Length: 273
Image (cartoon, rainbow, N blue to C red; front, side, top):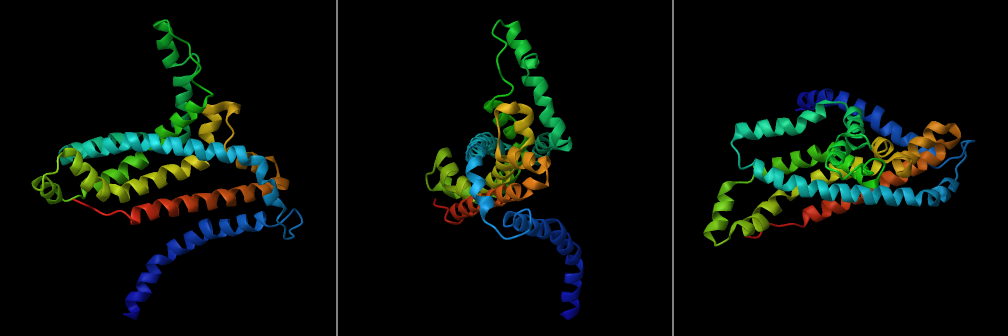
């Protein structure tokens, strides 16, 4: 038993070291800077400057919520219909969904500039029809579109995984009890797929609320999200590390609270046929 315990600890050691170096240590450094000033003395004055960035916080949360809702509305029926295909076709569809993720995140985001620009593909087509050009780039809609495009695989994958594990006998039992197609979806599939939905929402909301590159390239200077503010402060100089760390700490707390709330909703759900 002791040998097995020692072997398990030995195998887990690299992961523990990795977590300590790249997760725990950065968090300690962030908390240290958030509660100290330039001289290294304890202070709460950094939190007094949060009010200057309330608009950035509000926009970040608003855009992340909108992007997450749109992603969910697109991903749920997609994942549902994927489960109706043969296994081989399901794997092919999943490969096509994940294929863009093999490309660099920056390249995928930057490609939308070519599509949405005033001289881009969409506006060229609209001009050909006598409609355009329209202002598509450097708008809130472009930022949300970039979020949806970049993060939608993270929503589809957990929902599809949860749905594919649903026992068909439960659906057959629901049919025998008089449930129609919509009732089966509402009373069986939706509750059982909820863990996947919660995972997908978390995996989309977290990077959306903290993103900065998407807003910079697709939103221009008109859209300042909290991720942009943090990146700007860190790049400006060491004198702004304390405020930037404070903003990062507040953002992390908001994300943790949101995650806990979503998990609470997931735990309360039951299957009722």
